[in-house]
Image 1 (cartoon, rainbow, N blue to C red):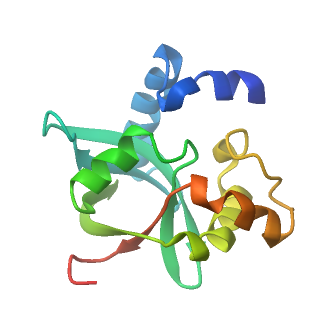
Image 2: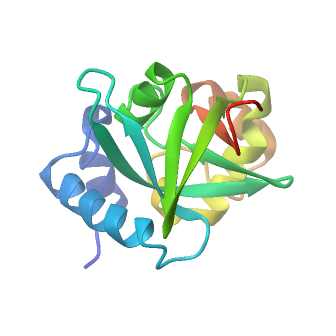
Length: 158
């Protein structure tokens, strides 16, 4: 099944997924959480900021200079970003096994090369971030403030 970039963007209008996006998210959270795909594909588990119940989000990670990063293709106002911030960065990444981690937000000045790498490696993010993955770094610097990036730290002491 093929969806146009416009349809993919529409599934997440307002920073929240519609019914179709939620069905895809549940499916991919199960597949990625089971560890059936390469290392960059994970399921983020984080307590909901209002309910405290664990919420799951299938995400692709960017590898950059020896670290792994999560990038919000929907910007600041998406649920997983708000939940991670409310949890003080404490989360679990699942890929076959659950691994507790701390997500450390990257300052805007350091985001551009990571966002570029993310678009090179995670095709699902391309319709949502308005820069071509082959564009010069300056174009990523211009939009970096709109797209949160989190470094995956192995434990809460990093």
